[in-house]
Length: 235
Image (tube, rainbow, N blue to C red; front, side):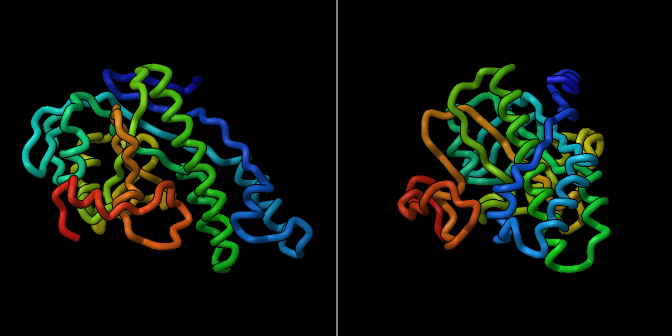
């Protein structure tokens, strides 16, 4: 892919195709294409496509040490029993950061109407999806890890959002190179950004299996309470 820059084990993706599926967008925001608001949304789509620059970085990292509830990756310690169990037989991992891009964040900051902000957020979410899809495809093409699973800091109580701090330490200045920053409360800017660790696996692990939240629009697998026994966790 054009725009890929490989520095040691770090890969930066900056030229990621971004084309909005307008029909899917209307479904996500529950808006009929012939409604009074449709013209404004279509204008927002044109603007977003013109300026949107989704980006991503990932790197090949190695597991240095495994403790009871901790994993050390490239000298950085992460505290999570689930991550420790999932990486039990894994020696290399692929941490990543993906974002809708600071260009779309600046564009969305101009809106103050709550409904329009919601539309803009959905557009940014689509840009983030473009970034993560490009990242995962690039990783598969270049490293051929086979079947993989992903864990994300903050998605489970066992690996809380505070773990973003060591995660960003793992990347050093690279996160800023794609315009992503971390606040003192561990929230990322742009707000439609995501961090994660992708790793080879023979199981079909998905974070959703350990998350009891009901009616989650992003759910990809049913909640499985029995998995808590496997990971030796108490809710």
